[in-house]
Length: 265
Length: 283
Image 1 (cartoon, helix red, strand yellow):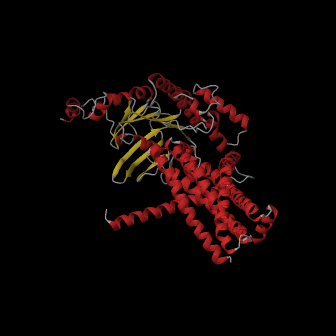
Image 2 (cartoon, chains in turn purple, blue):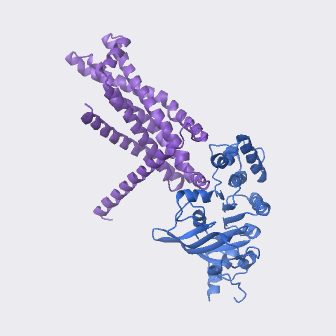
Image 3 (cartoon, rainbow over the protein chains, first blue to last red):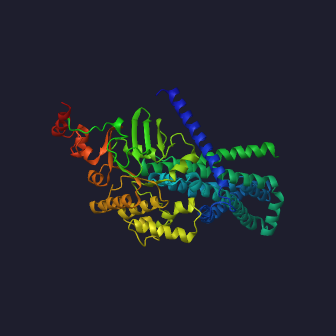
């Protein structure tokens, strides 16, 4: 295979991958409607609640810890520079806006990729290898509706919640810094944070959370559904799910940030 | 050679069919099925008719295409060309909705049992009932218990699949396949990986189902002893082509060298004796 052929082959593979993900996304979206709480299947709701506990509740301590540490690091790094200009109070703005707009959603997404993205891919991949997905199809059950949708709905519910927790943890950790370095009480710190935050920041944070959640669940499921080659294939798909999710989440973050920068000043 | 029964693949529709099935419309009809993966042809224009109420065993060596044929009958894969009619519906060109409707008349027992490990055995068996019927939960529980009893598994409803032995798992997967009272039961290597006693138990179970429910049963296997016991008719696949379709006696007495080699369990390529065994028929 010459150089041009390999570029062409790789491009076709990428287009196929994105095409496959897009088809899966629409099928998932349509099937999500069928599990609404009012007329949908009770069995799916039970599975969705279980997934909410796994994806959301299970990730809470790690999200708090990582986002808190990030908030404190931001405050320490920002404080060290801002002290030179006598503008230590600006740390409040720095931590508040950066956690809400950027680091809260991103840290929550990275934790969820590590915990749930990989496990979604491994779980579905194992189901493929052990013929469980085939068994579902021969029972006239759609694997997208049965396997993907409960995870998708759970992710769509829990990802914004985890993002709120991540933002809050980061901001509170920044408050610990200002309490000790600026003698600023927590209530004053929180009041000033609330003053500097705009609706745009909160909306962008939630949009990112939903977008990142969609990417994580679909990449994890897509990698899982396309496992080939037994247990080795499951391991490969898990690695792919994590690497591709991180790449796509960062790419999506750039797109969302640029969008809000240009269209919602 | 003159004693060989006339059971050419192109006569598969009539040959060896029991008198009560002769003239019936086939419940499964495979027509000119070609399956290729890249340049590799797995099935090369397969034709096969399976009649209502008969037990058809599909035989063949590893890589002969028998599991591929079964996967296509199950509607799990689309062929390169050709058709598979199940109850008159071509599942190869059917819409997803039509395919799902046809799949409801199929019960499938997989080689690996394919039980959902996150659910109890009872929930596994009850799954199709909960998904496709509006039966009340107590009724579903009763049916589940009954289906498990039918396959000789009582009191395992609350156990998880990983708490069962290989044979019990296979039986539980048959119970799940029976849950919706299917018209057609498909088995992929039912006795693979089981010791002879458990494998004999699975054979007995299939015989019991055959006698009790008069179902159409299709079994893919390379276990000859089991096939002789269970089959009404057998179909021999070799390198993606059907060599013969016929009754157990017809296949046993068939003179095609590959069928003789398979029936007499003679190794291929490993020594000159085996080579001459096969080539001897060609000369």
